[in-house]
Length: 403
Image (cartoon, rainbow, N blue to C red):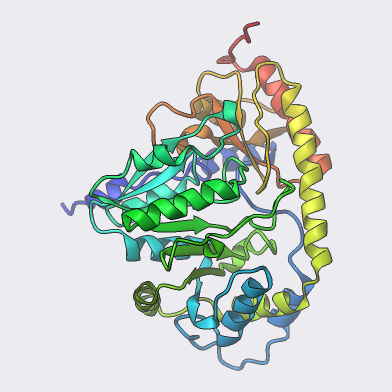
């Protein structure tokens, strides 16, 4: 009997997607699912994207360049320069979404058995990506009571071992919505430079910033040299999650050579979607992003107000992205999120959340937390909060708040 590899057995399930069968069953029973479990924006993708895809005059959909279409790399390099990130097109690799960019980055940085230090809670797939390459995520815990602020540089340094190859951050943060302070970023850059470590920064939520202060890319930090690696994507910025177009940006020549060869091994990113993204980039005006931030800020304010009105719930400050990592008065977040789909509805609807446990590497953490993606319009978001509040009132494993 053939045996599945240890790597395959070690791959964790997605906390966001593992409940999909229960949601499908609920829908089959006629229950409406209000999806707050996944970062899928509900705003329309740019019309210029659709016009370019529909209007393509290609007669044959051929392989594209392994590193991405030249015009897209040029457009992205110009965009980065416009926001103060000095790179050229040769330093921009087009990937099949930010997920592949992260995979390429970790593949080029990690050896089997090596470690990457990550503040937790973190984007759940980081563990899966590291496992893919026989690496290990070493968590640096943050606390909801501190609004998940980035730990001190000393906390990172204390976890460095001979096996450490990189520090990985997400700014603004998924699932926390945290925006890191400039001083903290500068200290991390200095630490990585002094220890010969890579600093990888997942910056796909850059345009979702409510903090009132600019977000600095790690490629804008002094003292890091060429050891900075930036991951980016159009999935959230343009509501193009299904287009699967992302970017890996670095000034390190050897790293770029390695990742270009990784890109060759998977042939090429999707051609039609790249053409659509080029058109969207050329058509986008500053007003688009201003409207985007205003819409999500209003949703965030509504969510925070409703959550903080629930007895026993803890909702931290949210400065960016479109997520909230929330503590609820429940016994077990995995059990609660499944119960919402299997046994509960409120006026014919239920809410789908992501269990907090999947965003931690530390055993036992996140058991009373859930991640909420506020990607629904305000009317549906209100209905989702009504359902959540009603669910907590009848959930068998609810905790009675103490004074």
